[in-house]
Length: 550
View 1 (cartoon, rainbow, N blue to C red):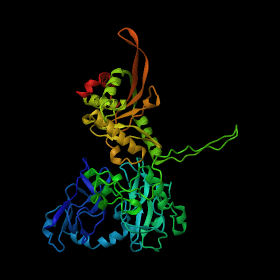
View 2: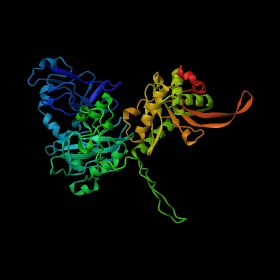
View 3: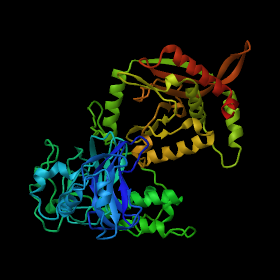
View 4: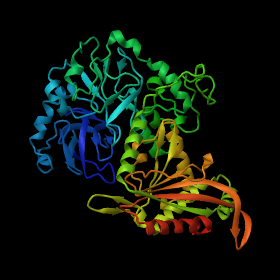
């Protein structure tokens, strides 16, 4: 019997979705686990997997079309099965079935990997048969342009569906970009290290030997695409795939398809234990499904002989005679550009004010030492600050707010962002529902997210939804500092170092340990008294840590 497939709810805030790309066409055989389509939600573009097997009989929402959650997306059943009644009873008109069948093959030839094919209809008609224009994808909800960090294919290489074409640096992370088409890489439009807006021509894939000269110009979006894409004669300017993989896999890098990662996550399987059968040792869906725990994976042939992390020696500046000017120009990364834009917007639009308190940390130090004596337990002072903030925010929700032109949003859930310094700047991974976490859960999650941030493996979804932010420079010996609010939050806490110094207790000068905390507040949402009351509660928790365990 045929099965209706409806528009899925792929995020907690999703109310409608857009079909970015269909990976199956009417008449295709669908197996359980096959990716049917890429669906753009309010947060990201995600693969939608089929949980049914059969023949794709009907497509109700075309590429580029948007529909509400639970709208009729497709129908899967037996070949030749009568589904007219199901179509008329669904959310899509019955005429869509006939329309879906005829142009499906043509659309497959001209679709763009990162945006709906309908946007390219005018110029797509001039494409040679089988040629696909791949554009710069939107890999995060805030991404407006991307930088090609590494090409894993060069012009003239064969590309299979599922191969990684390139690593693309967004405003939040460096992410793998997977090909959803097969053929030969005919042209590269954006070279390594170059940046271009979303929807610029990234590459062209098609049958070997096809003349694609002039195609990039026809697909320009307001002049954003490079005018001179690389051709086969210029292939030597692109780093060969084998060399790239050899230098990246040693640093804990795992190549795996998005579906394989999801299956491994659901089954609790560590991908590092699996030997991939795909290109360059890439882990596929079948590798995960056929994996038997217990036998360690063999070392990849592309890994260097030593598995120890190699410290990279700092570049030595050439000698410059005294009295001569010496300058160096470093190109701004996408992350650095985004930091500049966001922080400038925050400091110039949100009226900041700052409140500072000094907290006695003697009891916190004793409590931490006792907790860390428990086997397999490790809690930092930063974890204790985060826990205290989460509990204080529940008591002072006006600090856990967002400003909008016509209203103030008060968040009664607590999602704390933790500022992490990385090579190119700063990222803020988020701990969802922090108030519901124990100290050890906070410590484990922070460690995991910080590791991902430093290895550029953070996903956009792991940096979204913060309601408050903590920034800690105490480990660098900074006594106190002020931070710029991480919009759309209303406040950020700056955490200084714990210092041993003389303090007055009960009229006596004794040696104590104190820490400076500075709260930056958006005066549009947080008044001075509100911020002060929050800090008083925060101090109570930190000076009496046992109250956080109640």
